[in-house]
Image (cartoon, rainbow, N blue to C red):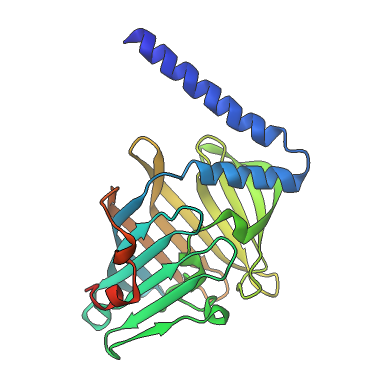
Length: 266
């Protein structure tokens, strides 16, 4: 057991050294920023599918709150962006509302919203993806998987972020319909988890800040934050997401992520 433990630690150390070398050997800030993004993405590959429960708390500038209960299903897609479905369970006035997202590496993402009161599926146009999702401070584009190809990158600096040391990376959306001119991300150097993102609007002013915290490891490999807090600096509003009951490799398939399945989501 001791020999196996030492061997495991040696292998882990070598893998970690290899990751740092790939980032360290990047010559320009752009190359280093891309290398960090690639490593972060590589560490989050192979989860296949997942389900989770979510509590969404909307808070206005006066501190008044409204709470919603949701379920989220996700499917990892090889050679393209992931698929996801977000379903509202509570309160009664939004129950059955569901969002289906097909993320893509280079093409515009596809999104459809099912509104049970209208009994129809509405396609979200690319030009509207910067709009708020169901009154929250999360835009429709924030709910897509963050594929490497969606941005260009620039490493800015190393900086302390809580108990960790983080890479600070600027990323610029390649989609002309994005509501952001740029984003600045803080990514820890130990597990390449995103702890903070600042979003800058089309006027290049700070619009929002997202803080992801209370990370938990699943299947010995995949890290997920239990809390995501989005603060809108221009309106004073905020939205908190609290995640629970994560399950992976549940057997979800493409057929679980169709426009018809949106209507059966409740």
